[in-house]
Length: 94
Image 1: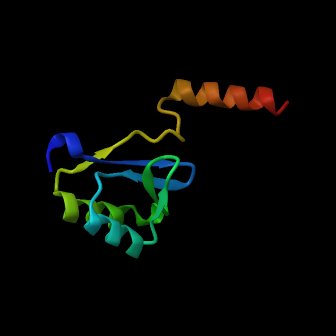
Image 2: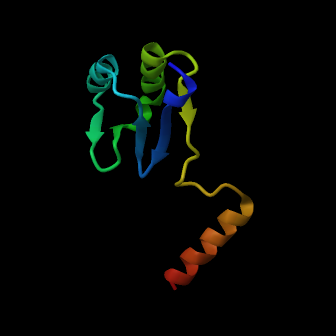
């Protein structure tokens, strides 16, 4: 698999989202793991507890260097972000 076709993984909204090039072998593995195709996102979704198994399946099908992890969008990335998020929450919840 060339670098332009890396699989991307991201945890968001309580799901593990996986974007891969079309591959019948991956589709079979994804279904065995309980993955579901999300048409709106154009990716497979999994329970995040399956992260290691999904990662292993991606590597088995596409190669050991096939995974690119997207930053998690659910979590703030720094202390300043956490403080700003807490302040927004407190303002909105009185």
